[in-house]
Image (cartoon, rainbow, N blue to C red; front, top):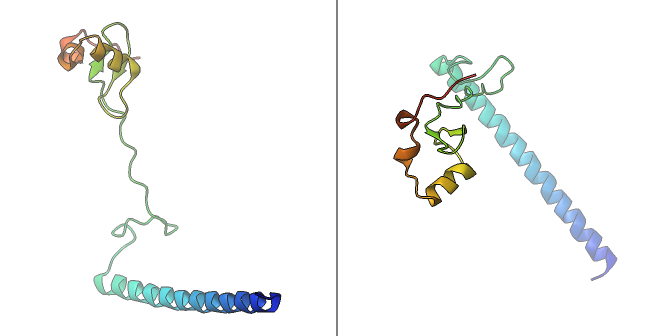
Length: 113
């Protein structure tokens, strides 16, 4: 393949990319018009669409860390039962403790700071 052929192919790809980008922009504009039309028809508000003042989506509230459910039988560590199991929990299970043994309801109350 000669350099002229390569340049010709590159130019053809650029032209195709340009046409695709133009088509995408036209499609996006039509979609935006349709969205605006539907918002008007159904009288949606920004809060109905979960949008903030700047038009960006409102973040969902941060989830509570949770109430501790399990306590380390050999120490003060606790775990809510959510997420990755802590090492102390894994070691306690290997040592023969059951979930019931480590439930906070079955142990002394956990001090909160």
